[in-house]
Image (cartoon, rainbow, N blue to C red; front, side, top):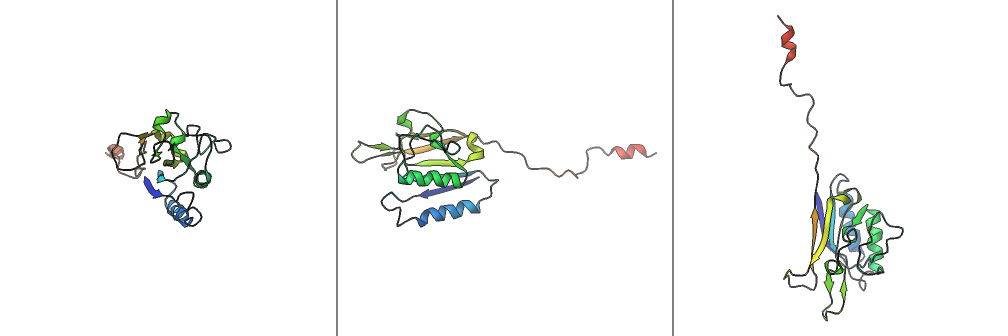
Length: 171
């Protein structure tokens, strides 16, 4: 399992700091396709509920109706890297979706996301934000519940059998 944690630039600084997305892209490409790849990030991206055309990479459980510019970039990033935006797969109450609150308390957005390999989307049981955590930030604590099923490694088939039945043929 490989977990990538990153902080993305805001919409205002997206053009100047676009290289940071390239760095995350480079790290993801270095990880084997066989690994469970989880990207946890303050993407600063509003993705909304509209998943028309990208149903394989996003559910309809997002917060809000429309995506911002960074949200469109993240959707493209996830489709390129075969990732699913985990928080959009579950239709929880809005109170469990928003991950950021403005300093005045009037605006609440879902801008932090957890993304996972598309093949492993069933591994995610739930993704929720928790308001009660006292972490000294305007962001909420985002928690993903996973149920991972791992296969045992292939055992060597040339090992010695428990009983050597060929000795029974000898006198």
